[in-house]
Image (tube, rainbow, N blue to C red; front, side, top):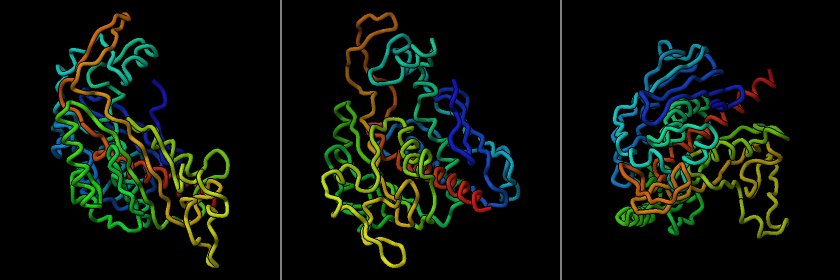
Length: 354
């Protein structure tokens, strides 16, 4: 399997499977001399880890990260940063029923046809457990570009949608509830909806909005490394993501140019920000904001028609511990990927100016 590396100058290469001994990664290109708060990295992992509330999977993993290299006396050394996260709570027997059966809307069929072999235990490499690696790297990137503020939050669950502009929200309230929505009234509705869906043995999707502030002007390239293109690629690499829009997004298609154009102020800022902080693929100094759409989790506790590896019709029902809605645990992953992309482009920009 190729393409286990993400990034240009700041590169993350990962390894591991959901039910293997461990997952982990190597980060290359991280600058030397950056002070690292290891507790802050663990807190980011704690936001993503399973078993943290009644509306997520009850798999109990501490997700404790062990750094093997690249950090000495609290600072990065400029060498490769190696880390590992041990798997401690696998229940592989929960997947014995689908050894030879393809789960609908999973990677089972495509993996088997592409590689001629697959790890049926939780999807192996295709499992969202891989995203814990991304959170470690993203937490490090956040500390490198600490002047940039990155806040993601749940903006919808199913048809329950928070329509407030992000400027009206208090991001400090995002972690005050288990669904990670900074609007407390909407959060209660979202939580009730997820609980209701879970009782039915079903799952539900939703959206995450992310806002990056205090962005320097000039991040991004005008052709094949547009900043929003790389952000989109990062988000679409996330398990269960089906859509990405930044700035005005699809709503912008309903407007006229006279309504959509962001008029400049004398200092270079703009009176509106329908561009989403990026113009011509390059950051303009305004807030970058975008929305990511997540489908319902594919594993449901209901009988579904499917086929086995021989093409025979059969049925399957999900077993074990699964998220009824992936969105709450994906919030820190969206932030992590955003930090990785922005840190990478920051280094590219710094290299150009050197």
